[in-house]
Image (cartoon, rainbow, N blue to C red; front, top):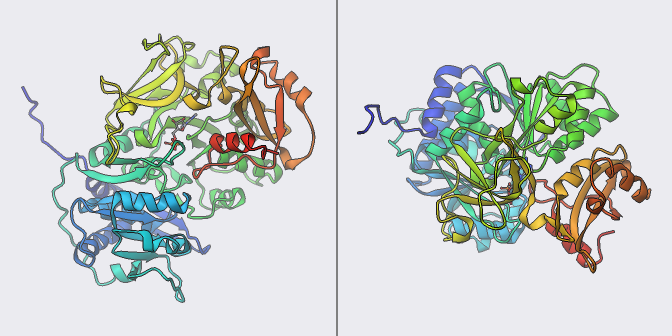
Length: 542
Ligand code: ADP
């Protein structure tokens, strides 16, 4: 028997309408690529989304199911694109601006983008490949200065496109399972793969991440979105902020630690997100030049790579700012778990509490996790037994765009993450490594994530990335590539081995160290282990 409840579609339009109805007075503040500041209200954004939706249909001929690309920083027009494109049933395809030309060309041709909205400061990246793009009919330039010129064919300016458009629109009736947006994986393991999000998955993901057990976002917050809008829909924050009524602050290309600190101060930001590299940089800059007044910032949410314990401790002790860890993937919308202490943890020592906060956390309602060991059995939830993390849920990918990639899914309908993890009796998941980054030395697994986290707690170390290198006796052994604070040239091998011996047994401790100027990073700022392994193999890691 079916329930007798209305079939109310959970779409991005319902998010937009709600945000306007209830929180039209809340702010969207953009620090634009040219250094200027722009501020308006949710209500203003709402009107412009409707103008955009009309322009897309009437001027650009976009219809339901068409792909519309964005190649842009975090700012107000990009938020308008999220809602305007999906609102008419087209797919908002956010293209990662930091990929190689070949990957960008592949992604645009594979997705069949009809129009691309591109930031004026980024056009040169598309100019190089425009003749290779098979489906793009027109480019719309965002944030263009008056004297702007480009060699891109068929261009329009965003403000001209919106001018003269009506603010009235009857949104089409959409099925909540229709595609709303698309993002490609960052291609750390081969060609990027498209993940097509639905309206329903977007709505459910956004409404779950704001809950007090999760992100704890509300209409009292002003949130800085450091995570790029071209990376997994900025973790769903542009949708979540309209549901929670939080002011949004968008930094566009101002991502240097000093620029972010300035924005945090000026806009009285209370919460923020970002990958650990960003927060490590901000912490070091604040240590060097401490702010005169305590920042309004209460918490920063970290995901994408492990949040080092030393960073959690340092930020909290020195500046009273809490680090909260989440885990996810492009394939999981992205947020799958988040780690917060519960009242029952109050009795634990500071060290015990830190252990829990440094885990990747518990699954959101609507998401299930399991660990499958090497021999194919279900691991017990004992916090010790390692295996591959598998996930299913209301916002987990069911298959890749245009690809029958069966090896990523199990026969009983779980997505294989490629992460090696444990889950404890309370459901807290902990990432030990990615399958391909694990180090197996003398038949024993060594977690590179745990070693990196421990090394980065050393006061002289800025960054540490650990990879497996071949060894005659042990088959593999760990190698630590180290960046010292202020890039000093000091050999610390003995000191580091002693330092690690507090937390690791002998066979786990690297005996090999390389001191480098910078750890190579991926397009989204994670340590690029594939590149480190390549440089090492070619003898170039010095
Ligand atoms: P890519 O797979 O191309 O790196 P994603 O951004 O989808 O792109 O990365 C997802 C991966 O990032 C996860 O499978 C996991 O290995 C890693 N990851 C994400 N969050 C965390 C976290 N909090 N701690 C450790 N690793 C994480």
